[in-house]
Image 1 (cartoon, rainbow, N blue to C red):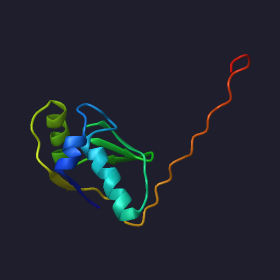
Image 2 (image 1 turned 120 degrees about the vertical axis):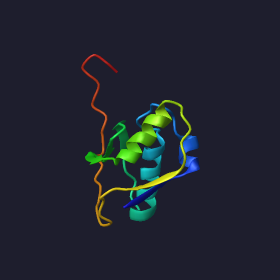
Image 3 (image 1 turned 60 degrees about the vertical axis):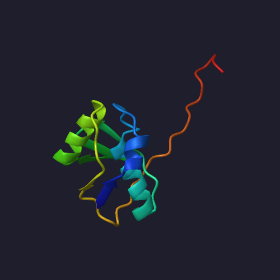
Length: 105
């Protein structure tokens, strides 16, 4: 699957933030558009992407982009590809609130 990190993704992104980085924002937008799925995604390291619990290794050019972005260096829009089949269904578990412990609440 092809991903395009745009100027909007870059402007919206937050340096050093695993959830609000431009690559994660791009991935969520692209999967929502192409696969019609809302997914959880975050970038725990410049070379790793986790989408709904599935680990994907990011290409070197994405790692270099993220390292520059996190250091406050100027970055340009870019495209990259990940081996994500178009028919994949990401399953995000639904979390539920645990009951309060006895004596609380």
